[in-house]
Length: 370
Ligand code: F6P
Image (tube, rainbow, N blue to C red):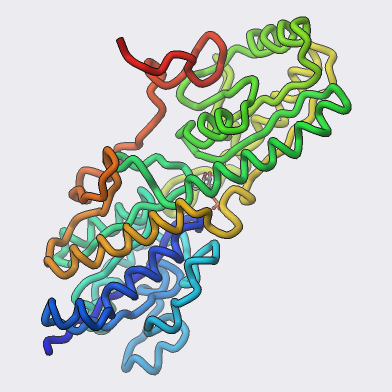
């Protein structure tokens, strides 16, 4: 039977849902019946630490790369769908970093490892590299993952629902203590430039105020809403704020000034700032909780396990069809595929017109369009 070697790697921020996708790539590609039907026998090499694994490899034979390459089989991945993070490891390495271009090493190592195709699980940055590699003749398939849900052309990115569950659970915990002390809790979520985590996390947890990067907020109005709520009988308040949100006329809060190899700065600090501002004006005790990497951690929820499974299976379908340069996607209730070129550099952001209530600073209260 014809043989073909697939490489698989995970890049960018880890999240829940990646391991289920890897498991189902492996199980589907190595499935005996499918191999017979397809007349092709696949072999799968797990590449460690994202693009870094393909840069640092010094191949002579597979055995030599014990550290950067893991040959995967069904037994190895059997339990992986239960675990968060990525068993392959990840990095925010950009082989096309203009200050240190390592793309030639990646291309040479793909060739040396004899990879006929590479399945790449990532967000905008990682899939951006994948797309550039397709232009250099590499057979790539993308699987979308990011808790930020900011990739276009797909209604779902792995990790998002698990992160929402974390936000919801943590807000539930905060409610009892907030209520006991009549406090305001400002909960800062991740999401970079996209407000999905804050918006849908705030909706799921029933937050009183939700602030997102797509709409600059007025601090005065936040205070007014809180005081109105208190007059209406509220004992405590939950304000969910996205790390990328900012007040009108202000600038985004960042943790440090260094940018990563994709040019991103790390956001953070808006929650603390807001809690102080609210306390100053309303005189109500306000505390800030930064959920940070808790949102990326923990076991995948049922939805991420299922979506990881479907995306993994679809990725192997594409490899079998030799339909490369595509990303698997979930659109309008169906698993489908989109060209990688349509995904890159077009962040999917919250639509203020249809998805956000700029009066209440919250999710919309009318949903059906007339
Ligand atoms: O893109 C995922 C994400 O979790 C963002 O929401 C967040 O801004 C960023 O990664 C944090 O990155 P790091 O783990 O490198 O601090």
